[in-house]
Image 1 (tube, rainbow, N blue to C red):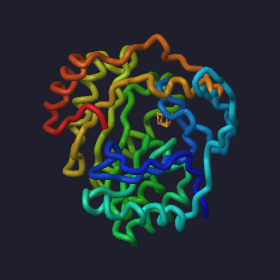
Image 2 (image 1 turned 30 degrees about the vertical axis):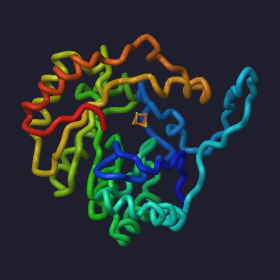
Image 3 (image 1 turned 180 degrees about the vertical axis):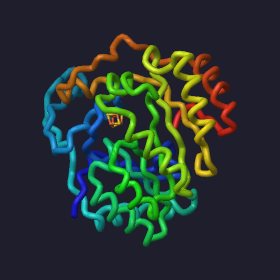
Length: 266
Ligand code: SF4
């Protein structure tokens, strides 16, 4: 069994506790308008043309996106970073794309990581069959779980899929005894209106269990927007500006009333 991975990030500090190695896995059933990793959406290997500039000279080169890894290769990478991971109480994170999209590999990888004693995290949109989540619960210490919009029609508009499965899986994981950090992308004009924030705060407050450890508010940014051209994917967020710092502080204060610690950023 091999997993298709488009990036491996060492010394990652935003994908769970401590210093981590994050594997970004290809394939995602969603198509969020603001996705920062559009190279993770297709489940296939891709070749894209990269525009380079060295001084005054410009040239194109081909870039392969996606490489197959065995669990053994992955463990080899983790072995080299083990000292940093252990000293910082870090671990390994599977992100994407949607890591559940390559469920068989993810399952094997998580199981192997636990056999080696690594702290494991899965960064997920929540969009996967319930049974698959149930299968990985014993091998996952932390779920980084996105909630993008509570209104189903709006959710379909923004991500291409219904939120029903996602919210059901969120409730399932809240009862799993595993740690959860809920991640809310703050997208101006799309999900940051007061009515939606009220609904979201109420949902988090009324459903929370001991598992819910933190809320991360992820302000919209355009850092990944240039990738869209490279991947021939239309980018519709060009006119949207990142939320102002003051606005993020107000939203942070608002969500602190859930009684759950809130952080701006991952
Ligand atoms: S779920 Fe994540 S990876 Fe998938 S399209 Fe949305 S933002 Fe991108």
